[in-house]
Image 1 (cartoon, rainbow, N blue to C red):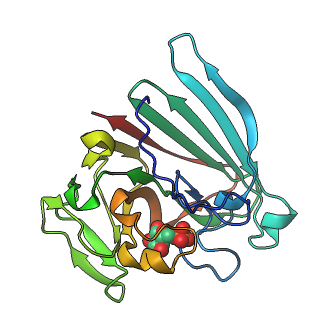
Image 2: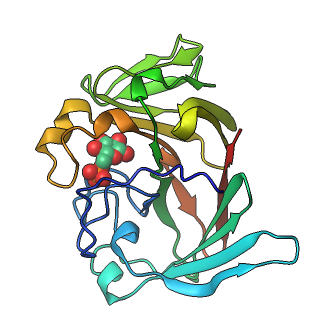
Image 3: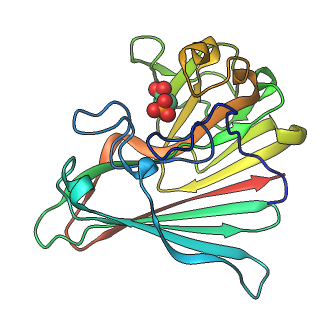
Length: 245
Ligand code: BG6
């Protein structure tokens, strides 16, 4: 993808202690505040293994594969053996993310959340239009976690926004992303869509520039309202394709 679509705050801290404020952090195994470990789980804080360094394939695609397995550190928070595999395919106008979570246990199932916390860079978030959410129920975290139903065909943002839309369709579109282009999100097995912009609350965040919030929007594909239950010896697969139009 030649157009750089990802937002990354100029205040982001790359010290490996906290998730950076930008890019596409992977939320696993827990979404939100967590009694047993860091908010949004540990996967976005950890060093993943490079299974396959980025390599150009015969058809011109670039492929890279990463993995993350349980360790003493992860089991100190979440006592489950697991293997997460993350395969990226880069094409001229597309980025494909394939995620697989494997449960190697012989007799124990485990529940987890999974989400791609994608930060999009935008010229002006007030001008972005998100389509595809009409009719979807959502939890509004800015209004006491109450449930509502989206009645708009086109969702726009002009204030602090933190919503978990449920049962969202496989395809969503965001207009006016970087360079004014449209971004198509196509997803599989990720039924929830979180929309987040901290607005002026960004001023209280040390790793977020005070004036940067108009230039980002998080549209996050995942499964976070009902955990995925993974039976022993089975694999859960999900994917997302971002396509610049
Ligand atoms: C979103 C959540 O996914 O992530 C928000 O819905 C949260 O509630 C936001 O504030 C950012 O989280 P963090 O941990 O990266 O500051």
